Length: 147
Image (cartoon, rainbow, N blue to C red):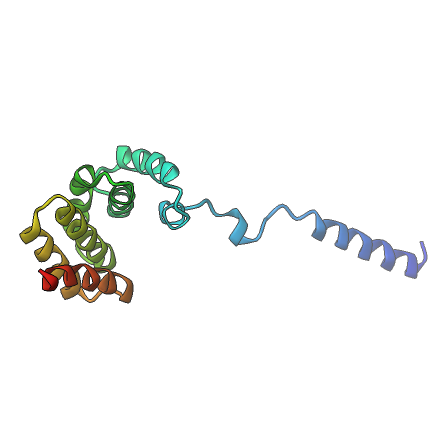
């Protein structure tokens, strides 16, 4: 074969192999997390995934948090409480703790447990975990000031 033909053949093989690469970009190959489904509002998938995760580890903080939040957002506030309580007991995950306290406050409030609601919301604020959880707690604590 001539030198030019070899170069063309080599380039063709290289391009062909490169285009057949089976690895997908990381953004497309990762499975969705329970948080992804929650943020999309797909509570059915949150519940299904949470049950699977909690069967493996009943203390999984993220599964407990997002399952509890999904239940609360669907109006099942009494059912949400035990899952959110588990999220408040973890260490070194202040964002999960804060959101657990915030949603506990919401659940307690909606069930007439006002003292517990106020305490949970104050615990959320005290953690100063992130702006979102703090805004969530402040908004709900304002209900107590209006009484």
